Image (cartoon, rainbow, N blue to C red; front, side):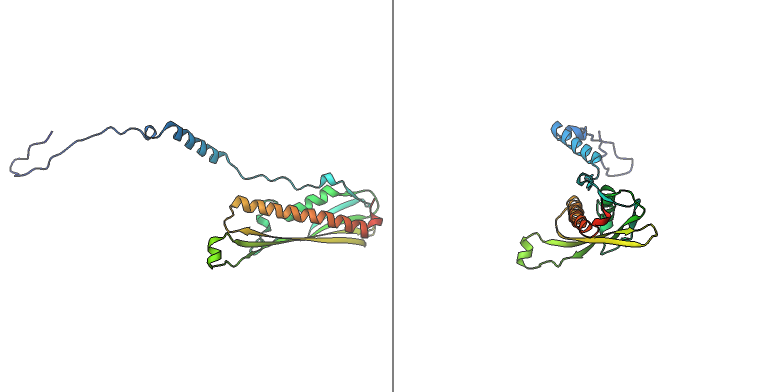
Length: 218
């Protein structure tokens, strides 16, 4: 209804009260769309970080050293700054080396001791130059290269504390990552890099120990 103009005013502005019922938002969407949206939200809410399998060599059997005890020394300290990125790996190389020593080295009894030293366990990142030409515009390029190096040494000491033998080995791996790789794909690449370095390390150090320290093994 329109109000009459006030006294003495030659024109008036109509005041309208037009109200339309607004349906709730859920009634505007098909039931199937709502169900799908709820499922997606639930999946996002419950999805956690990927848990990677432990890198273990327990199934390979022990390497028994004729000593009373075996110690593990972390001589490598990660700087945790660029270009080093090993601290960002889902399985840090140094931790994988400690696990290897616990899995494979056994003290078989004797008067001396042994020490497993983690000498190096780094991974460095290098940014790769992008091809800005026509070919680069239509291809997926590698954006980073990762160079990993691990080194471990087993030292044997007699009862007086004098070092009577040692054996060491180095394993290296290099891997590139595509520019469109997701965080999950990068983590998978990092995990595989650590695992493959450890596989190489295990085979190489066992051979070196048996070749050079055979008299100290049982």
